Image (cartoon, rainbow, N blue to C red):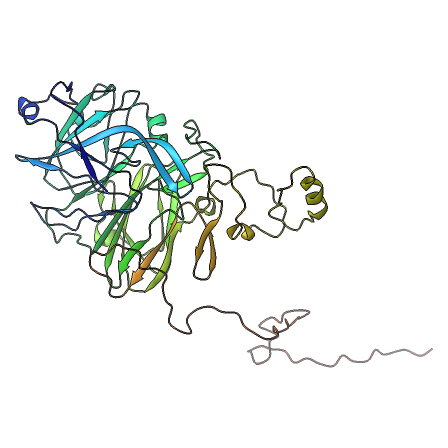
Length: 464
């Protein structure tokens, strides 16, 4: 649930990314909304101004605003937060307004926005508006375009939204540490024309990655490659909400990537087109159908799909180690090895020891062995047909007939029509046919140029 809090009083020290006018000081700083909920919140429909279809943030929410004359005002608070990746694991991160990532900011092309940023971190920070066209002094690069925002201080950013599209926000102060601690969020600017690129449902999330050892809570911020938690909006499967979609809806999914690697994002059962990047809208003539699209580092890809096939369709990163949790990358491959004698010997010293991998790793999907504190199984989740054996960047797009226009509740498992589910074939399996050699087209009967096999002549023996 959202709450309201007043963070600054009359004695607050106010500094600016650019000069702060007397008008702003007189109006005061808006209260900052905050939340710690982990579930996807309903869309925040505009109460005034141009109409638009608001976004829904996966396991997140949209930051409320207030109108002050012709300015739309927001208040971000940079602060330490606790984020649940999935039930059983919490991370101590830095974020905004009670969460990491921070709330999604929504506005309309042509809006004048005033964004207050209060720093409650132990070190200075800034906010960079990734992909935005704005005055240089509002770009948020500490030491280059503005002074850093010291702890306890509040800066204000003021600019006009020159174009619609999909953008992000994140620090440009101590960037390696602060982004590795989870400081990021999405910024969506809707077209001024409500009919331009209109969709029925509009989802948004940002990808981030962490290395958090089992039993600990803090990310290792100096890690560059060996991450063990791959998240969508700082959640991992089975903690990621599904995307409920009404059959026939035109759906947009905006995906930001602030990890250290690219992600090939794949949707089952449909094809889609990339219609927007952090550089702007993709002209219709430049699009092509895809089932997988790569999202580079520091980029946004917005895909659009017509949900014309009912079902529970997997939606995930196609790098297989990104759909696993707490994965140890130094795991040995024991497939085919006989570990029976070794297991007995080790269990005399470690009674709970259980080897894994001699017949593959699928057994992990259904095992429920005790885990170290504050970590998650590498493969987990259960569906109507058994273990799902996933983690990390995985969820489902649930396409249903008759879903309400703004109903984002989980509709439950899909009921497949009779006769449309793969099933076991009973009875003996057909025996394979072995051929000593495969005939070439020239020798295959019934084809042009096929030769007729002749009985070899008996050898002629010369008599003496």
